[in-house]
Length: 326
Image (cartoon, rainbow, N blue to C red; front, side):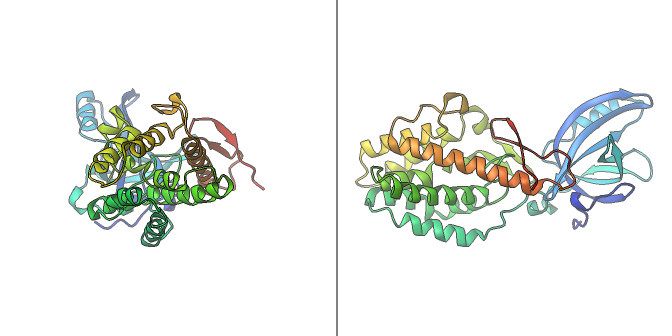
């Protein structure tokens, strides 16, 4: 079934018959005519609440709900209604409405997760050009052990940077990494005291753990590894594993890289294993933080409707900041 109707196309009163991915779910509750449950469903253009109005048999509704998982793609026959001024999909178990799981083998992930507006191959080629600027042979070889690994690169090019706040789309990790690298190269021109090779190497590899942080078939979800360990530790592990095979890479160089990777979030409450204690670590932390906040703000502003009375940007830390509409 080819997807024809997207969230951005929906309007009140519209009857729809199409596929949407499950983003999250809320347990069944009782109402005057029986039991209902809510889902949030969506596609690459956005998300929308969906309510399933079940019958009076609680067990049947709860069993149906339990068989729906986050990330599933549902074939929805329903109606677009409004609730408290917002659009939602309404589905009732009658002859006109249906809700069923789609055959996952026929699903195209690109229909459900947005993709970077940039050209992925051009961005990767530019990243490789910057990797070639690393003069230290061992550090350059370490970076290229990843960037010349076809399996890793395939995943890296598709990976999102985050689930929600910045570069949260396919190709987002590559886009974010390239931005960090460009800012790192500008930073060493202002602060020549910095070790250019070390900072450039760290800027390229410090988020490689994010390749393993998210499952992103129809929605962006944290992997079990990410929930229990986190991408910074995952990154340090895979970089150290590769480093063992790089001729000429000293233990001191690897120790400095490990510190920069593990401290690039800056503060312990933000997931840092260490606070930055070297010039290059301080530089990368602030480069990375600025990049996330700037890109997040721009995305938020682009995503808001001009008709919205209040335009608000929610930062990575969950702080709400007003956006000037002018």
